[in-house]
Image 1 (tube, one colour):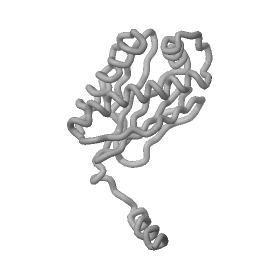
Image 2: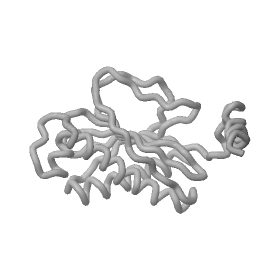
Image 3: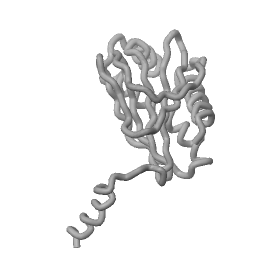
Length: 177
């Protein structure tokens, strides 16, 4: 999957979600590919898996202050600190944005499925995806804050499966019979 298509899909989905749900216009930055080591920071991160003939993950991350701003706008309430409600909103933002990406990409990639999002908040932690795949990253700016949107996809048939993992289903099948 080419990086331009992935970046355009991220921008389109984020534009729709921020515009419809929050009433905010976004300004997307230049898309880039991330290969390097993760950096440590204080962030709110939402991860969501994609599966089908292509597999991978989507990730959004932003500062705690911007997460509170988004939650305040979506819940029409004052969210001054990262609470369970703020984390729930970030999970829902992940669902909406990557749901839009999924719908966009299904025309080219076939049916895709989304996992339940996982949201992480803290200081001095890093996220890393195992494997050689690179991430397509788009930073968006909205309402005096910024959010990084990332996606990593690989064709299922291109993934290398460890030989022991290939044997596992056969061994389980024999145990069950």
